[in-house]
Image 1: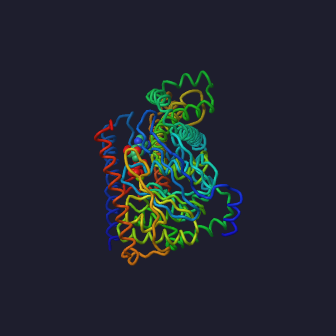
Image 2 (image 1 turned 180 degrees about the vertical axis):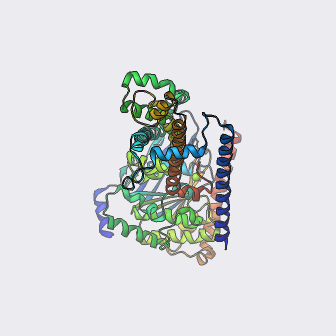
Image 3 (image 1 turned 45 degrees about the vertical axis):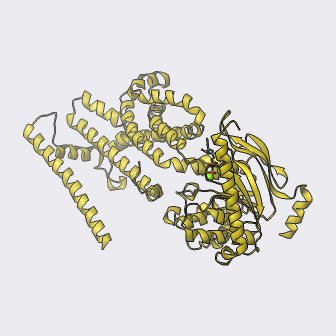
Length: 272
Length: 279
Ligand SMILES: Nc1ncnc2c1ncn2[C@@H]1O[C@H](COP(=O)(O)OP(=O)(O)O)[C@@H](O)[C@H]1O
Ligand SMILES: [Mg+2]
């Protein structure tokens, strides 16, 4: 009975959400049809163009085109590689630095300073030092992704219940293993929140990094379309980026919900 | 069991399982002595209660005895060996089970947590976990999370975790302070059963006078500000105890009253001390 009511409520919420999306799309369609402005193509045209560009391949290639392989795949690979690398560094440094209360005075000021730095400002520096190649792009994305993860990991590690650590020590768990067995899982909910923020940053930096000297990627595609006045292609790229961001976030949330179900049960509150 | 005891006696000079000698602890240099010159011993197989009002330094003392914390001065030896860091033969049951169990691990994983540093075979780990859970009456709850259990059951998980580790000394810091009276009585009897069955030495910290007398062979009374040993009493009761008959036993009633008197004396002493600090 209550399960039925629950699924009923969930279904209704889904209908409302989808309805809103459909209504907004319809409004967009109507406005752009009315406006007849070449800079504002209709969403239907954009969708058709996206399909042409990336999703009209043969079934053997899972319906994706060669354009998909040159535009979308490298971008996603760079974003994910940089995100993973930055995330790993942020977690590792945060776990170790967060463990010692005395390190706080030395660690926090530089972290807060670099975190507040607008990341696009460092693109030229990375270009000069590493050159315009994939190594530079991944390094740039990783660099941007470190800070939200590092900050969250630091704070969460400092807040780990001391009795949990005492328990580890009492049972003779070595310090390196305590990081993996106690600090990491205890800090995981906050770390996940940091990783989610970084995922958005990774996409931003991915687009930026592809604005210089590359033949592949959505950032490059976007810039090329703009320079050749392919307005529809430009919009298609923007929509594709939005779709990617949405799907990546959705995948991450699903993973988070699975891995951190205990936290919801334990605290009775949703994930941070 | 007997063979092992003989072996130990052959290799160590001191017969006490735990010897606490002149422990003083201050949090931070120049701070007040929270624990001041505490000395006592626990013999092999003995169950000793440390009883004292809350804030008298029981937890601090426990942490220094277990090696979790270095005392400002004084020494602790376990089976004749000085303690620095938690020795392998010692396990702790903490006061607050909701903070010492890992909320991301299910009951089984929580209990086998302590075994992960011992390098045991997988099958041996499984056997020990199953045996310990059976000993505390939690068979069948292996796949639950601790936060799905009642307070009393959670503390049973913490006890099972300590048992699986097979310690020779078990330190329990006010383990039943936050469960209801009925559960508390059950857990007290569980402690007695475990003590008998596993033949360990137990140091049991409590602020509950009844509990201290009911459980132990000997009671060490602490006083507050600073935490010092006020008195020690041997409990003169039969080895097997029962919640109803033991607590109605005139010897229990008398000794309970005596310990209560000692605690009151200790409190009066420390009040006078704090009112007239120059004395
Ligand atoms: N980490 C700490 N830092 C400073 N003071 C502490 C700390 N832990 C406990 N104390 C103080 O030491 C005294 C004894 O505390 P505690 O050992 O927890 O007593 P009990 O366990 O008997 O209630 C209290 O006055 C408490 O405020
Ligand atoms: Mg305490």
